Length: 466
Image 1: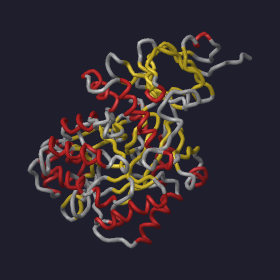
Image 2: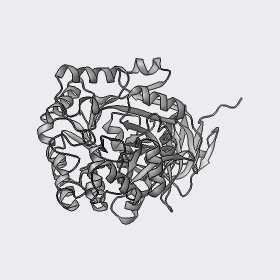
Image 3: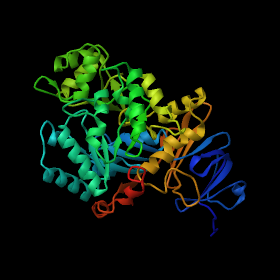
């Protein structure tokens, strides 16, 4: 039997690896799921398989720092693999739902989940013991951390602040969709950050989403947001996305949408923030319901959208075209006086939401001259890996996990996705299965007991708690 130096060699591609200061045509040697060589001319070595990537860009595997791929929406795994995502964090799934969906539809990626704290505490003050119990239970079940879903289902400022403190005391990851009962998912929610945060740290979700012109103009709102995030750089990490549509819920109770974000979207275009107003918005083509079709989620609107929404008794995910291109561009590219990006990463807030456009629109920003290739690789891979303490991700140095995103520079689209040294997507065809769950040392036993491989993220080594 032949003995191979490498399981796989990727040859001839332009390797972009900002963490290791690489921008050159090099070969990558992969063995046992790790990068074992990065140099010229290794393609002549004995390799089980060689893939010629001449003319392509070779990025560290995309680390999507904000997705939604929970149970019932597990189709998002295929959708993200198709655009180069090798690692991601779900922002809003209980571990039972997350593990069920991952087991059914995982395609070889490395994925963690933040437990959503929303309706169980909404519109009331909660005692410290109840909050601490929720956080401890989520961690014990394998959650990577906590997400406060304040924009959709607002909590009081007091409860919100208590959750942030409880997570910080335990050293677990804490993310926040801004907004409380006193503000909302807009610039007022941004202005509330310092008071809620105190001396703590947290992740601000989708920084561009609070700048849709509900209070000031989008231009004024995004500049104010950038200034505040820059001032809080030692306490806050953040990501933004490049999609035009948002993601929300179409579910209604007592004649009005449950989600405050949905109500905001209706108000922005002059619709009544009621169930009748939402029905009209869908009929008019402004509201879009999400439906699985052909192995992916698609948007449906108009008469057919209304029919599907009513057949599901309104319990459907939705999107509205509400994001400001100006705010989105600024959040992705703004730097402080030291030349550092104010918003750490580019995410999608996608997954099952069909706006997985981080690579495609990121490459458009490169062509425009707003980002360099190295800067794009940093925001797509290196920075988000650092945010979550994933030391083996986000770069292509020797010993790193062999996660690679191959991009065709002529069209700006992902051509191949490699996770753990194995292709999981090639030219739109999904090849992978299974995957690894990101968790904490506390949660690893529960994940392993459920039958999944685990990767322990070192929160205290990540950007959030450093």
